[in-house]
Length: 603
Image (cartoon, rainbow, N blue to C red; front, side):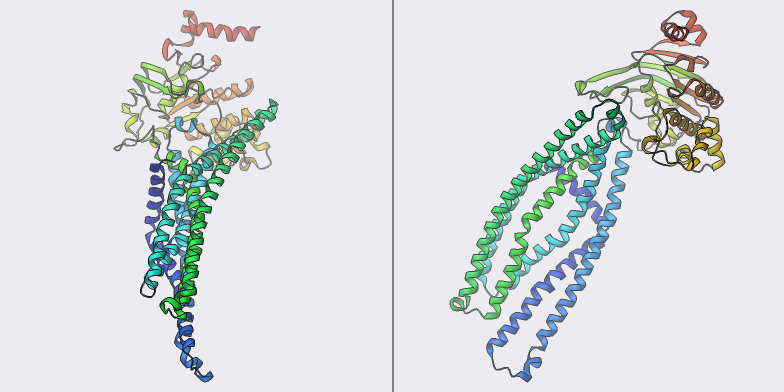
């Protein structure tokens, strides 16, 4: 992982922690107090007791009067230490709870406001996995900081400060070895950091493969491709295993080197404890302090490798989401953006130039063979749709029909030109206000794993049940909804999997009807309906389109034949424009398409 990515991760985490700084500093103070009271004060009390015992001359009836100050010292040290321990737990818990909330909100806002180009280039399952790892890594680092790093620093500083006046030579030797230890561990830490990032990326890819396969399980089963999907999963799983093995070897090497240095410290400590009295006249109590402090210090330093491993893993886990958070928004509101106000609904496309990059086509899918290429869709494209006009867009796949509606919705931004609604440049208005003025029904219905009522009312969450029912009736959906045992409270399943294609489409149309926006965009909205349902829906949509600016994309020309105007696109260029009867009479591209479709029905 690049250093900048680690620094950016620290920035996001640090900003979150500083937002709740009282708990952060409470955690530091509590961690320091816990370490000082239960390790150093306890040892000092015991060392004084040992020195006093070594002096002798204590009668049985003088035990309490002689040692009472040290007993009180021990009791107070343990009492204060336990209080600090609980305050430490409280501070860490609050930082985790508040930080998790803030970071989850940050990630959700960042991902939900990213462009469709961003999302079309990534696995949804991988983004979910990255989000979970990003927030979990924060919790790991908060716990590590308070339970390991602060006590480690406290133990190091207190050991040196308290022992320096008593045994300066020992402190000098110990400090030199600790400096070497920290340098070695840091170098090994940097060596293993990249391996943790690689392992985390491999795990995210594995999650993405699993999510992709499960999401499309029907296609897998109906195509008999279980073995193929297992092969993809096994390949990704082996990559995880290999990356984890490389990480394990690097970690074990680091641990072995660190353990060797710890052994050296323990040897020096033992020599000083054994010969300290004979060589330097060190008291028994002070020897206890040397052993106790150094032993506590080596225990903490012995865990520093594990600490670095956790830090490595945390930064590795957070790396990809950090990069996503740093990803510039391809479609962003202007700093001075205002809300769109639609009075009439006139739409004007003026001198548009738009191109896809990185192999993302009109359908939103990524073509690996075209990665890094530029595909021109529109070049100096202009078209005006008068207020209230119902217009049909037809043409072969890839002609630019769906792209045009995506540009209108600002799901992508044009490179040149402008798109205006009632004279307002949509690049200068807020995206939310723009999209609230447009009711959009795509070819693939977009349903949530929620109730039918919630899905219909998604564009108008304040709608009453009567209004929801009325919209469902107009969309010819009421009949099948009422057949469900739970009616409007029926859960549709993920992406509406519990409903048929036609049922999902009618729910989406009911949502558009209820939204009641001044501009309507239908992208193959009736393609999943049978002929009878389509006839009934067409009547409902006819009423809905009355007085509204409507854009209808359709391959089935019967869907657009009664509209006010039909525009035929080819390679991003308007090649025909007029009413159905006129286009058929002209004998051009549209007439050929119409003849093939109606001829097929006659055959």
